[in-house]
Amino acid sequence: MNQSTNIHFRKYKKLVEEIEKETGLLEKFHLKHMHCKKGCDLCCIDFSIFPIEFHYILHNIRGKNIDLEVHTDENICKFLNYHSCTIYSYRPVMCRTHGFPLIYTSEEGEPELSVCHLNFTDFDFADFTFENTIPQDKFNSKLFLLNKEFIKEFKEKKYGEFDLIPLKEITNYLQ
Ligand code: SF4
Image (cartoon, rainbow, N blue to C red; front, side):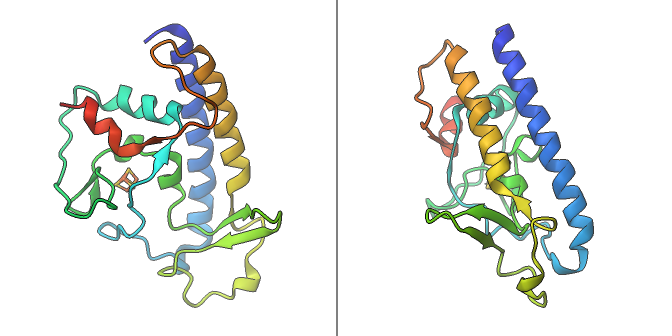
């Protein structure tokens, strides 16, 4: 890995730590309303990620023994292995906010709330505020900017700033 990639990966890791800090606080705050637990994997569906996340994960798992369950359903994330995430320490940002109440801006420019239907079953939605939800736009913007810097200096492959790569494609590099 060259020096500039190393610097971008360090910045990405810092963002992940910032998100983990925020989710850690929210987890304590919403403790009795969140029922996420090992084995609940409804949100583990196949999705796409920015090149910086793709290469960060690939860099960290390449050469490791990653167990992959064969799923007949193409929509299930390839890294879900018997109800457990096989790349948990390196999972993408999106996975780190699974289950938490998220606030984001809709295409119409209005604040929208996204909540897992298995959580907050007895919570008054009117009580959700910017303080007790994840500010998804803020983290998405930070990730977008980090990715933009990363792809500018990434020599192995050219990417456009809106390019996303299916997470499952990482498995093509593992054999
Ligand atoms: S990477 Fe892990 S946490 Fe994220 S969707 Fe896949 S199995 Fe779930």
